[in-house]
Length: 95
Ligand SMILES: [Zn+2]
Image (cartoon, rainbow, N blue to C red; front, top):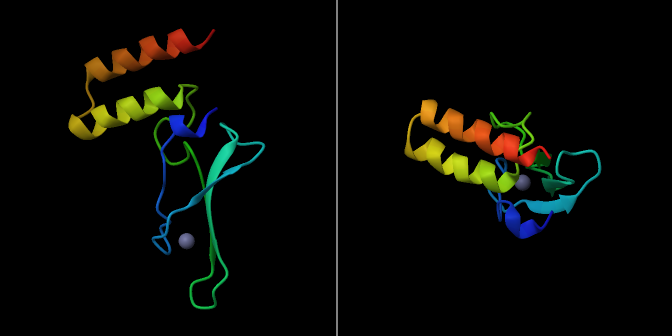
């Protein structure tokens, strides 16, 4: 997985800084976003896997397709057209 196929950055929900992309075994894609802050007044260790928290989290879709569909998601309400599109792409990916 190349880093440029996935979102280029995420903002930490706690400190609003950019999270760092790190390699990690055991996650779906082998990468996770992390922000670790040891400062006294805002200590946190936020980890976010690439797909966690999305309705795609259990899917095996490539992230590129997820991003594509996410643009649908924000542009239009969910409808049968998108559902069918999702199924087609999913089948294509399960080789
Ligand atoms: Zn942070």
